[in-house]
Image (tube, rainbow, N blue to C red; front, top):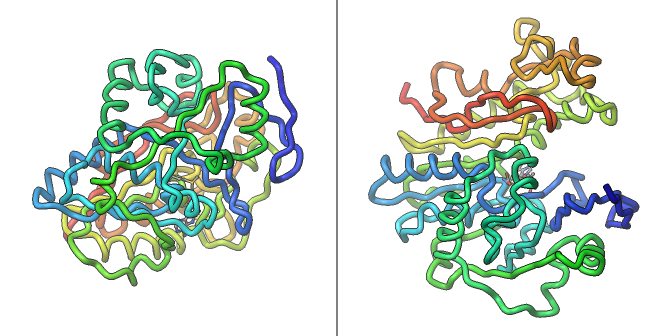
Length: 356
Ligand SMILES: C[S@@+](CC[C@H](N)C(=O)[O-])C[C@H]1O[C@@H](n2cnc3c(N)ncnc32)[C@H](O)[C@@H]1O
């Protein structure tokens, strides 16, 4: 396997050819990753959209926090194209918000959503399977491309689009990989009124004025940033536990606000990143909530990183907060695992607000 060393905004970074991550954006202030792609965990998006349509037939707002550059909000809209469903995407990171403002989205080879490119439905099978996100079948890929093309249209290339992706990685890829392809798309004008992307911090979600029923709140693959949960870094030996974040309290505050904002029968949707489902315990974790990694369903004794960390102390404060007083119940599941190669574990990703 050829490894290419290329400088990126944070100095030297090794980028494997088949793992080209065009966006590779890291928030300069927080150091948190902003990566996203279209139809990430598409099964969950599809289930969430069906749930909203069934419970809010007259329409609703969908608040998509941690939307990054809006690829997630657009994907949700793809499943709910009717005008009566409005998707409002929010993020706290400037870089992806700037991209969202540009309104130009790039699809490129060797990434999780490459199958959306014209004529790419049947390619990169292996890559998509290796990503750990359940690969859409060829038929599903065709359907997803159809959904995508219903709301997006190709945009002719302009030189200013050159820097949409991480410029060093993209430049190197374009120069050295003859099979590399990139396409540009924009939202069709008829959908512009039903998607808005702006600055918004989920910590202040309860201050946002409600204009209509809020049928769903998404906060996918961002909770670990809120809680500074470094479990995978610690397990692989290049990170430290943050002992000063009370993760139980962060999750409780978050869930309290979400419960207040959501309308009855609304749903809260989380991601499949392992760090939303398994957290490092610290001094704030009540004794009864602590568990060894080896006691969790995510433990894989065949992986040396798991074996070395079998007595790592973990907790699940998000589930605890959601289940508290029966405020939410899990209604749909997806799959998560700690590292590539570990077995997948079923995890709850769509939580329904229960009237108490
Ligand atoms: C890894 S990206 C996930 C993007 C997308 N949800 C997905 O799953 O593909 C995490 C995003 O969460 C955002 N984020 C972190 N804390 C946030 C907060 N308090 N409010 C809103 N967004 C936040 C980050 O800026 C980042 O863009």
